[in-house]
Length: 228
Image (tube, rainbow, N blue to C red):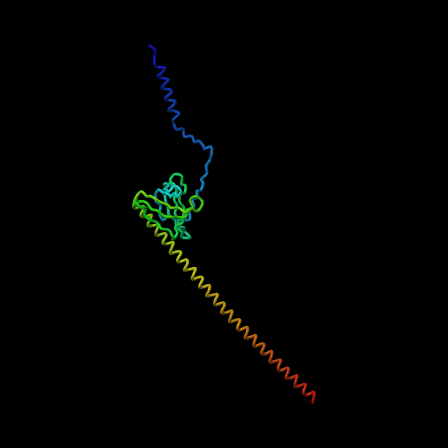
């Protein structure tokens, strides 16, 4: 009967060698290529998020007369820190591709989509594809609460933009009136100056005529003495 001891010993040696290979030697291997950190900008650095909600966006395809999905992701209303203007931006969750990008303007209205209280629809001039397009959007949320929050905030922003436009128009009108008042005042001052100049000119002409008359009278008197 052949002994199995050599085979058993060989198996133990192989296991010990494998265990030795798995041991952490503490050696550090430097990376072949060193990658540097790169600052990534989103274009949202100068804006504050008013809302940030997960949703799914659709656009109405007029040619096919049907709704088409634009993407699922996060919809934001972003307010610019300096101008106060608000825009709607939505990016797809996985690719971060922009699927909606437009300003909220006073003329915009948003309403609940018929038959579904978790969706809203609105018209917008969108710039997501790099060019302005008139779009009819429909957005769907997972909860009724999120849909209501989005719809109410959207309305509030549109109304606030209306007030800003009205205040701007009022300021512009006030500035224009002030400018006109200043111009009118300047015109009045110019007219007064013109009248003063005319009076001075008339006075000079009168004095000149008076001097001429005196000189003529003197000359006539001299001629009379000579003839005598």
